[in-house]
Amino acid sequence: MVRRTYLPRVGSAGRPIRVLLAKVGLDGHDRGVKVVARALRDAGMEVVYTGLHRRPEEVVATAAQEDVDVIGVSILSGAHMTLFPRIAMLMKERGLDDVALLAGGVIPDEDLPYLRDLGLAAVVGQEATPDEIVQAVRQAVADRPRTAA
Image (cartoon, rainbow, N blue to C red; front, top):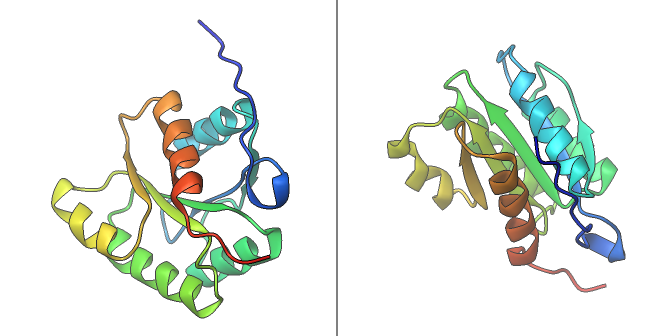
């Protein structure tokens, strides 16, 4: 196995990119999100994992408290069409316009346009490699709106 070493990329305030990973709703399988967390950490990012069965309100509150650059939500349950609109709305209410929202897991192709219209920075499918996930997070951070300091 080839182990890659990445140089950290800069998130807000000149620090490494901070990513919040969450499993929202009744989805009870978190092996994949733990693999993603490891890949992001290996790439020099700071990762906060909220654990299983979180509510959208908890995820957004934690994102604000932890001052993250990215929220990554892993969905395997099929509840993405209900949960992502709620998360996006709560992010807007909390003024988290500079935080990128990413989806991962099992999401049908026909749902992608709707999710992108909600403002998701990226949708990473279950076949994505760790390198592709790292690149998607870095691109989401690079593309996000900047707030005035």
